[in-house]
Each structure stands twice: as structure tokens, then as C-alpha cells.
Amino acid sequence: MKESKLSILTKGIIKENPVLVLVLGTCPTLAVTTQASNAIGMGIAFTFVLICSNIVISLLRNIIPDKVRIPCYITIIAGFVTIIELVMEAYAYSLYEALGIYLSLIVVNCIILGRAEMFANKNKPFASFLDAIGMGIGFTLTLFVMASIREILGSGSWFGMEIPVLAENNISLMTMAPGGFFVFACLMALVNKITKGRNKRITEYGCETCPSAASCGKTGCEGCVAGANTQEGGDVK
Amino acid sequence: MSFKALIVILLSGVLVNNYVLRQFLGICPFLGVSKELKNATGMSIAVIFVMLLATAVTWPIQTFLLTPNGLDYLQTVVFILVIAALVQLVEIVLKKYIPALYRALGVYLPLITTNCAVLGVTIANIDKSYTFVEALFNALGSGLGFFLAMVLFAGVRGQIESSDPPESFKGLPITLVAAAILSLSFFGFNGVVENLFG
Image 1 (cartoon, each protein chain N blue to C red):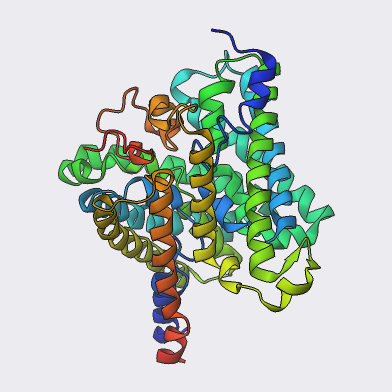
Image 2 (cartoon, each protein chain N blue to C red):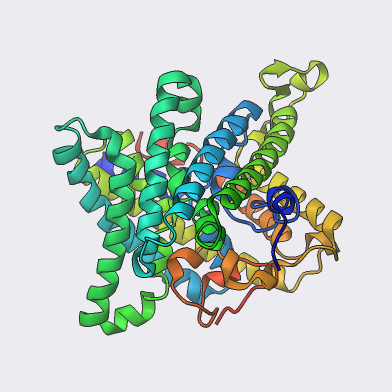
């Protein structure tokens, strides 16, 4: 069944939200969401890399030999990450400092490799472009919501602006590691609640959404240890 | 460079700056492979192994090849390719010469290429301008920290299995809440290393 252009664009926002539904790319999600401005910066950097890599991989999908496709994808992605790193260092240095190591780590972000493997190498460049935009928006939006919750509760501010009552009564734990896990858990539970029954569960996607599927090389979930990264637990042996 | 400094780096990596629970690196395997103690241990040992090897290879590349030639901007590309190649190589070598170890670690090795903790530790070593030995100790500490978090969490998850959370919290959300509590407990280690050796 051919997907319409619009559904390709919008599915990344809620239905196949890369972070909350597919549970990919959790590391940057938890790490950079201490401030709303950082989250937006990360989201933009991420979306740029995803769009570029998706288009290039889609253009090269008939040229790259199947056997060495993963190293090729990683090289392409790493190239674009380097570009965004240099651009940010030059024009948005404070953001570059704030994101730190997580900017380089976009390379190993499961979402980008996952989209390359699931979508870009099977679809035309324009569809891949739309898919990347949808996924990018979904990612940025999730990061933004999470960062807003954590910044407002944790530091009593939003985009650096102080909020009168909360600033004196902040729960600083929220900006630290446990707060990150906790807010993420609550958001995921909320999405579960909203989409209950209407949403395809992660297990139905099988191996394709597995964060390690790209490097796994197995076609089935037989003996797959990382398949456990699903609601029902996959096929853990 | 004293022995004490090395121990401080090692212990900070394990406890204070725990990669999984404090710096959010390597969350995917942390959530994915921590369901059973056996898998958690296998994965962690493979991670420690690859972290040490990757550090031993990338540090000289950065120091003797990239920096003198002004190629610092290639760091990300070079490091990820080196790690990917290294993992592949280790897999082939183990398969051929130490089949027993391959059977134990084999399934985890391909998953490690995309583990951000490994790339993270190699980049962090350069960012903090560690010497070669310090970098190796940092890698070992981070790896052991990963191991500790995985094993602890495998135990916690065993308990979660038999609990009955609210419907929408079933599965991953309740696991993340448990991770939050575990990460909270690691706050207890704040300042411990400095006080012991400071």
C-alpha cells in the first residue's frame, strides 16, 4: 500500500513519534532537555542531519552495495554531523558549548540510522525528504515539551525567562538525571494513554525499529538480544 | 601523573560520573538488554572490551595523526569509522581464534558500533586532554560503570516483572521510573571520591 505524501510527513509527529513510540534516540533526549533553548538547538541540528542524510542515502540507494551499506550510511551521517558541528561552533558558540559531546553523538543516534535503513534506502528522495522533516519535527517537539517541563519545574524559568513563583520554589532534581528519566516515563505513559488501541504497538514493527537493527545484520529476530527494547520484550532468548 | 590520580579517574567513571545514570550515554542497551542478568553481563563485558580497545586506537590517531596535521575536524568521521572497523575486526578475530569467547560475546559485538557510550568515551578522552594512560583508565572506569548500572538494573527489572503498575505505565514507562530511582541513588556518591583521595 502506497502511503500518501501527507501521511509520510505527519506520521513522525505522533503516530510513529521516534522518541516516545519507537523509543529510539533516547540518549540525547534525556541529556539535552535541561533547557528549552538547548532542546530546540539539538532538534534543529538533528533535523538538518536527518534531512541531508536521508536525501543523500535515498539518491545513492541503487549505487551502494547492500553488503557495505551500514559503513556507507555512517560515513554519510558523520560527514553531515561534522558540517553542523563546524557551523554551530562558528555561529552559535554558546549552544555548541551547551550541547557539547552530544552534538558529535548525533552520528550514532539510532533514529538517523534507523530512518536510513527503514525508509531512505527504499524510497525516492522526495519521500525521504518528507519523512525526515516529519521525524525531525516529532523529535524536536518531544525534546521541546520535555525540556519545557524540566526547565519550568527544575529552574523556574522558560527560555531563560524567570517565572515569578516557581523560580523561588524550584525542584532542582528535575534538571538532574533522575528528573530526566522520570519526565520521560510520564510522557511515554501519556502517549500510551492517548493512543491506546489506535496505535500499532512497537512489537508489530518487528526488527525494523530495533535501535540496533542497522548493525544487527540479522533478518529475523531469532536470537536478537536488543529486540528487548520493545513494550512486550521481543524475542529475548 | 600519580597513581592516585588514576584511581580517582577510575572511580569517578564508575560511581560519580556513571555513563548511563548520570550522563545518559548508552541508554539504548541499558533499557534493551538489561532484562536478564546473563545478557546484561555479556553486553557489559563486550562494552568494556571495545571501550578499552577503541581508546587505545583512537587516542594515538588523534594525537599523532589528526592534531599535528590540523585535521581535528575529521575527528567524528574518523572515530566512528575506526570503532566500526574495530568491532568488525574483533568479531572476525574472536570467531577464528577464541571461539569460546566469540560465543559468549559474539551477539553483542555488532550492537556496540551504535552504542553512543563507546564513541562518547573516546571523544571525552580527547576533550579532557587526558594522557594515554589516563585515557585508558577513564575507558575502564566508564566501562565498569556501565557494567555496574546494567547488573544493578537487571536485578531491579526482575522485581518490576512481578509488579502491577497502572495500565499506561506498563512496560517501558515503569522501567524508566525505576531507572530514575536508581539514578537518584547514585547521587549518594557525590563527593565520595574527592573525600577519599582529595
